[in-house]
Amino acid sequence: MITKAIAVMTSGGDSPGMNAAARAVVRTAISEGVKVYGIYNGYKGMLDDDIRELTSRSVSDLIQRGGTFLGTARCMEFKTPEGRQQGFQNLQKHGIEGLVIIGGDGSLTGGALLSKETGIPIVGIPGTIDNDVWGMDYTIGCDTAANTIVDAINKLRDTASAHRRIMVVEVMGHHSGWLAVTTAIAGGAEYVIVPEVKSDLKQICDDIVESYEKGKRYSIIVVAEGAGSGIEIGKKVEEITQIDTRVSVLGHIQRGGSPSVEDRMKASMLGEKAALALISGASNIVFGFNEGRVVSVNLFDAVNNTKTLDPELVRLARVLA
Ligand code: ADP
Image (tube, rainbow, N blue to C red; front, side, top):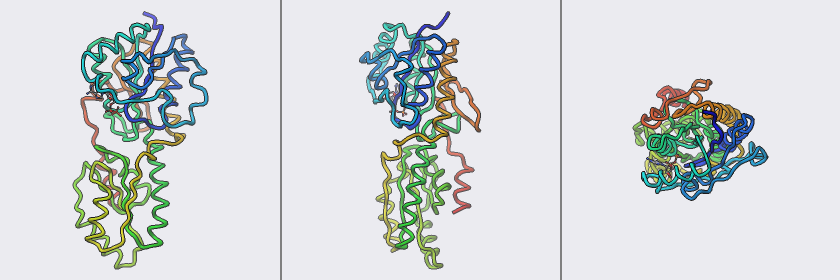
């Protein structure tokens, strides 16, 4: 069977580089002579039939933009088999024979269920700043987000040092400490608190007091939001250490911004791979990067397994603190 039309969508939390990936899918499909549709606003758009054909021009002037021109949304109805059937009917209406889904764990889980129930071929591309998709060590947007955080840590260090303060920096990551531990290493933070590893706050405080007694001028603690509220942790730290403490909750600034070269390059490569694979009849796979190389992972394996935090990173953060 020769594929005549595919679709591309972004779903779940947005991440810088999603545009570059969608652009690559669109331009690859067109260069292969295959029609390509954009599904707007994630699964919500699939259910509402917010589906439009895209041209090469539709994805002009996008590679440098964060966010996603296709929009994204959370859609509870898609979690029901009836919702997914309705979405599938809309795909059929447009003659769409396969789907590239750019999104995180939740979006890929939705895609796996859609494929299982309807048989529609799905190829996934991991798009999330959390870098928490199983079977790979990179997801689109994690590099830009990590750079944004490190830039903030650099600035916070200047002011913390001037005042001899402790600075608690809360970063994103409900279940994943990758962003926190990576930016703690790259930003030279003294401590990192992540959901995956038990931390002893009293011990951290005692260490800080000792280091201040020896003349240290500041201390930076990076906290992943899933490990506790930065504000609460800051209060406790100040109470225990009696050292002036400030908290910076970085929030949504971490999601935005122009994607880094790494995110643009990898997103472009994954977009091309995903489109070519789908067009040539592949299904139920996710393309990602692992140890610098493109890998393909079974979609069901990717969503049924949980990625764990690399203990080497945790160890390194401790050694270098
Ligand atoms: P992310 O893809 O970033 O992990 P979410 O977890 O919010 O983001 O998922 C995005 C969307 O994917 C949800 O709003 C929902 O429509 C769909 N989805 C998530 N989990 C499931 C699931 N278990 N079953 C079906 N659809 C799901």
